[in-house]
Amino acid sequence: MLIRKKKLIRDRTETDEMGTPCAPLTRVVALAVLRNPFAGVDQDDLTDLFEYGASLGAQLAADAMAALDAPPVSYGKAAIVGANGTAEHGAALLHPRLGKPVRAAIGGGQALMPSTVKLGGLGCFIDVPLGHKDEAWSFDHIDTMTIAVPDAPCPSEIVVCVGLSDGARIRARVGKGPNR
Image 1 (tube, rainbow, N blue to C red):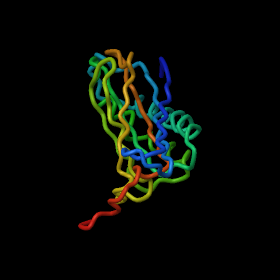
Image 2: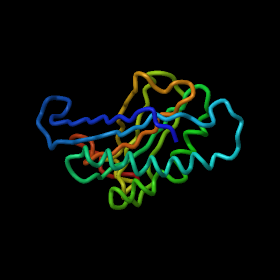
Image 3: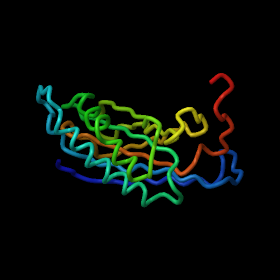
Image 4: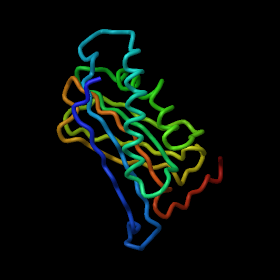
């Protein structure tokens, strides 16, 4: 796995959208920009990407954990695949093996880790979905952190993201919803 760069994006909110002080919320996305070994190649066996995903999960979770102010309660993952790859390349990094080392780093995680994969070019925005690590039906924790990397992904690269949050949305008031 050839990583060109790693980046950490940290977002700390201390007031709501109206300017009213609130309990602080820290959300972080740790990401890696890596060369896609299958860019431009018609390959059915993506096992190498499964292994890369496990390694990236451990690395990126450690980076994200170090940037939080409190223990994580929400998590998510995302990938942007450059034009010479396919969405399946991003899925192969995220789904089979990336989650287990993230769960190990944060000390658990019973709920599915929300995810998204898309094809995109330089500076492409992606919404990194966040959901409660143990309670999938906690609507107050369903959130998104929108990020972009100005110089990635190049056509033969993939941006892999792990997001963590130490709380629910600011002034969340939805709960579990009336019709769950």
